Image (cartoon, rainbow, N blue to C red):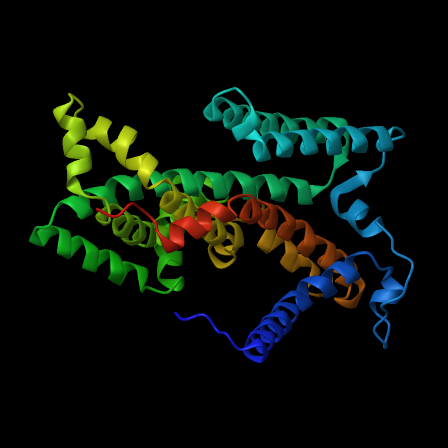
Length: 339
């Protein structure tokens, strides 16, 4: 693609990009404003952009009651999160193995999530957040593990069976969500797994697996066979060559595929709604604030809470995408070395 030399042309391109970015950010910006408004301001006939902000909606969403030392606990939790994020951002500059740092940070977040309900009285929304984290992480781990092995095998095997498997995976991917609901509902009823995270993870892995296989196969096909062959000449078997040589090369592609899997599992609504009755994830929980009924408050009374819930569910995804942005770009543009 040739560089645009015209100053007017570059200005117009930037104007279009800025307008498109503003258009895309408007729903998030408006939801953020609604989440810090009082009920009266949120339901005003004339949209209010100047108002007195409040955090009562987030407090009501996450906490049943505020403890006397709530400010101290909040400062402690914020400081712990900031420290863990800084460790992730500056891991390359710390004279310790990156694997140890990432493992320690992951353990730190697990301990933090475990400690929060023991420090403060959380609401059901926190439980839904934990369900979302468990379902998302479980889906990524299972789906990427199977996808890496299957994608590498299909990239190195060029027989007719590989074509059949790929076409079958593509056809399976084309099926609508409704095609998965009844089989997994029957499986959950038969195995007594209904309303469990395990059943949701199995269903999401089945939905996402064809995508991970196709995408990871494309990354593995870009790697010359000579790379693992040289490793096997040095004494490594195929599995060791795959884990120690091929996986590090395709790491940006694996992260890119993991991020797409994360978005699918994190935002899934229909399967979770049907397969669970109480162990909801955030998308299903947020729907409580946008659906009225005779036994529930009106939709207008829940607008600030719904906005706070949407922002609370969006922020973790935004942070993850920003942190892995460099790997995502590498995976989508290059993906692997060229032979």
